[in-house]
Amino acid sequence: MNVELDPMQDLAISPTGTTPAIHFSARTGVLEIRGESYPENAFAFFEPPITWLRRFMSETDTAIRFDVEVAYMNTSSIRAMVDMLDLLEQAHLFGRDVAVRWLYDEENERALDMGEEFKEDLTLPFEIVTLSSQE
Amino acid sequence: MRREEDEFIARLRSILSDPANVGDPLMIPLTELLDRHLRQRRLLERIMRISDRAQAQLRDVNLTLQAASLTDPLTGLANRRHLVERFRREAIRAQRTGGPMAVLIADVDRFKAVNDTWGHETGDAVLAAIADVLQSRLRDYDLCGRWGGEEFLILLPETTVEGGLVVAEKLRAAVADCQPGGLMRPEIQVSLSVGVAGYDPAEPIEVSISRADGALYEAKTAGRNRCVAAVAA
Image 1: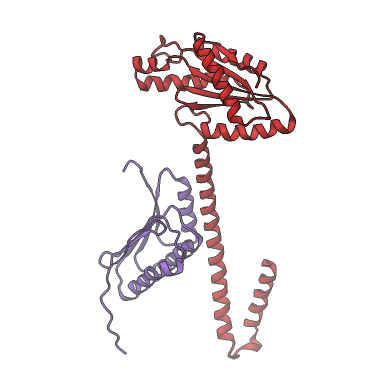
Image 2 (image 1 turned 90 degrees about the horizontal axis):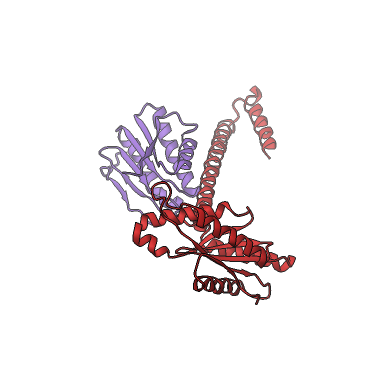
């Protein structure tokens, strides 16, 4: 059966006090999540980006770059993040060009530890990048 | 828990690898179920590990903020909030033990002239230098903090008014002798007026503080650069 799918649109979610900004670009394959993440219902909040990511991976073979700049998050957000990284890891194992950049403020060294913890168990390219606060 | 689970998984594996079970229709879903379970378990452990990190991070931030909320940024001394909290705790302690406690309020004499003559930046440095002098002359258990502008409050647990007056005199002399302008401004001289009061367990701490304030006022009107003890309540 032939199903006609809409062409992929960008995904843009504005930040709130408890949720991060999300921007996924279908054209460039750059996915960005920035801000703090304490949604009351992380499952509902992360469902659109996870669905988008699955679809993007099945419909295109564009290289993916995933930029994460989330210093603080609750446990259910960690779970969603782990799920997304897991999807990317699978894609990487199947030969897709995937790279993750974990961005953190140089004044928050603990965020570096978090990045390293996320990186563990993964084999995809995972770069931890310090952001200078002078910027 | 973990051992029981490991034993269960070992049992499942031996069932799955038993040639007698080949062809059983449950073998394929059972294998898949086991794989899914092991994957979920790894995921759970990963999430817990990261979550532990996140909480350790929050705890650190919390400690940093707590320290910041109790410290005066200019002098590094306790701030007013810290002083009041500690005073309340020590007051409860003094009520219980019946021990004495002295409270000192020290004010830098004619500090406005320092600011006017040398500028606020130097004024700030002078204040920080005086804070260091005061801090270095006290016992670990005493608490010296910035009460406001150029005013310091010093809490001396287990100390009588007489003992407090001795400490006050020592602090006054140390400040009169110091060079708070450092090598850049060795000509800057400052002095300290100090009011001393004894804490009375029958009264709220605010009353002790205001008696120390009254004594400070007396020291100022008597010509500054001196210490005065308030008469007991």
